[in-house]
Length: 433
Figure 1: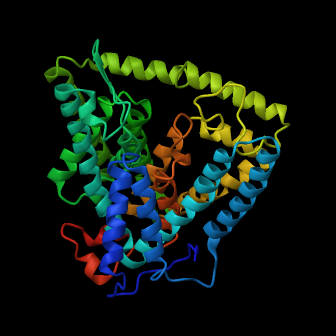
Figure 2 (figure 1 turned 135 degrees about the vertical axis):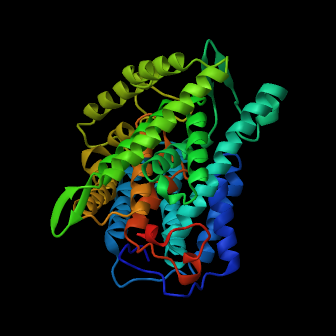
């Protein structure tokens, strides 16, 4: 069921029911555009969607690398849940760990693999492009409502809403910025997935504006991350059994995108009096230099110290370090170090194994010239959110886990969609792979 072998959709057919398709579309939209606004509803939608997808999910005789990694991860989680309970972990931590590390990844793998099997990666990428527009629109709506009607007008988006536009700086608290990290890096790496050139430019501009006004370093950095991933992937092309540099049009395309971004930034700086680009850049560089801020530095130091205290064997799930970030003593923003503290060196190696295999497979496709536009889209988004995981707990959010799981599942399933999906308006046939 969790196989990631080349399970191509059956040509010309899609036996996914309209109800399952609609349910998945709704679930995915809620998770991407309004994450954490309706947590209980989102959890119920995920469970219902995964249940319906099970009826159409095609199994494989091979379990696949992702399935094996998942099983190993479940074993590690169970062992360290017991370790944590022995050391006094609260029951709430145990329940949350099981939900986040075992149940949620399973639900996402079932849903995403079914959609990729039945509709193909072209459909899901096109849907993400549409959701990117909605994400940018939600940011604009958030600013409008907050600035004109106050904090109570935006409690649907986030309970502790805040916008800081002062001294040339702009920042806001919105959960959708997590989704935008993935989408921004992905679209700047593979802008060609948006077939219409005008829509492509407008969407990239909207993403830049959303990033600059967010005050979120991880989102702003997603723009250059996407550009760099896209540029360097296209620098290598496989011809006649040898590696050569890509055509001149490859770097010209990214030069044009870069100049477009610079122009948009300059225009925003000139037209909006309350925003000063130099202030935003200075704040970004300062945050990067300080490792995400004093609070994150303190918790990172405590997690490293705690890891050494347990000799790298792991403290157990549900156990907190000497510095606590919130009322939940076992939850930290620096996910990699928190995982190392909780499950030790060996457990962390098993958790990170699927990502290592994924990156290795992507590099292999780059070197053989078989990495398509959609693969590049997924990989850049993954790189963006994986870098953000050092300062944001997205990997431990059941709503945001799609950003980490979708690229892994998509690479193992042939993205060519059924015949009816290939006729989706505006999609060039050559971009499917």
